[in-house]
Image 1: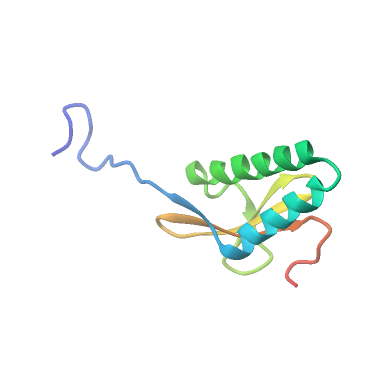
Image 2 (image 1 turned 120 degrees about the vertical axis):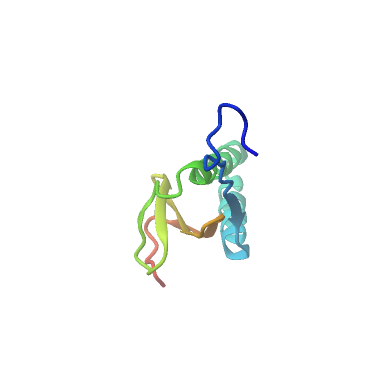
Length: 105
């Protein structure tokens, strides 16, 4: 039963954020590559990618329509794009790609 001030149909819809294995590997590779020259910058970029992906939980339509059918793309940094898809209960980050990289491959 809904609370006194809550209409019965006003339910909170929770969306989960999932990093797929390819996206997690992309993120790790980016972090390791940048850390060779600047560990602090690598950590800052990784935190930025995490924060930008986290925003998708509240606003899954934040990114533009993707170049691959069924995907969306969010520019997380001037050099990196999050490729993701959305279902009723989940946002899945599929890849983290350098903006200069040709996508789809």
